[in-house]
Image 1 (cartoon, rainbow, N blue to C red):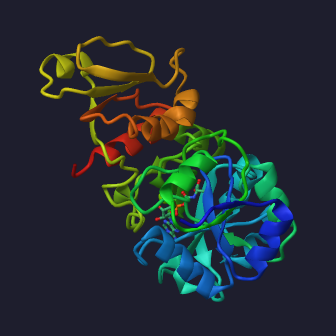
Image 2: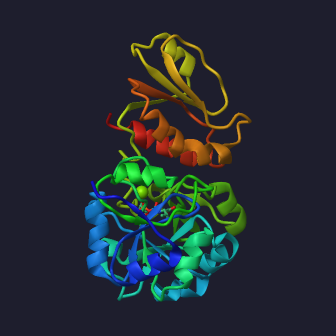
Length: 321
Ligand code: TXA
Ligand code: MG
């Protein structure tokens, strides 16, 4: 088995310049990064993740004026949102420059871009002269990584160089948006709440089905899935009472449940805080997945703030199981 190598920012910069793929921390989840101009390195990302080539990558830049390295015809509203939310977990889908590789855009005419809000990611981006294309550092469809240990578990034999930035402070991926006619199109719910986007932009935030846009190619229903079966319900206790499983895990916001089949019970936030719950979500699913459970019963979150993003991930984790 090849050992993973923990490296510092300078070493990461030189490996990335030499066309290597490097694991980097961000405030949302860990990323699997490559020089956006190196197509061999971009292809390596897809191969490592087992990611379909139809699923485009996010480009990471160190400052807002670098947006023009990847995008053209940037709408005014995008610049306003960048000013408020960058660095931070907001990814904007914009018209792409011609020199952005089709490997990044998955053949589309758009590119997704953000500035990560993590000191090591920013230090790294500031000492290289190219943006970094980076998806989440998990095998395709598995739970996203919020610690370096999660990445190591996901890519056991890959011998990847990694920058350890500690546990991710947001713990759920960036919100991915585009721009429609007098609306913001939401491609993926994430760490910036819909309410915040509506407040700052004064525009309605709509899923692509309600606009003239098509859904993001990456948002297949099944995703973020532990190996253990996942069930999402509003009625955890009722489900437990008719439970056919021997070893059950419970993932709730703050409620306690009791039943003889419960072997593991994680409350995402004792105070019912949805930001804290989002931060703990993937780490809790990773932990549950090592507990030899028959199923993980997840309590549906309130559909507000980051509750929307958590419910989205839980529903995708439960799909097709
Ligand atoms: O928080 C994050 O966004 C993390 C960190 C590493 O930055 N990255 C991440 O990347 O979650 P990934 O590849 O796991 O998810 C990217 C999402 C996918 O749903 C993809 O389909 C969407 O962004 N996306 C990328 N480019 C797009 C485009 N041109 N149009 C629509 N959706 C796009
Ligand atoms: Mg991902």
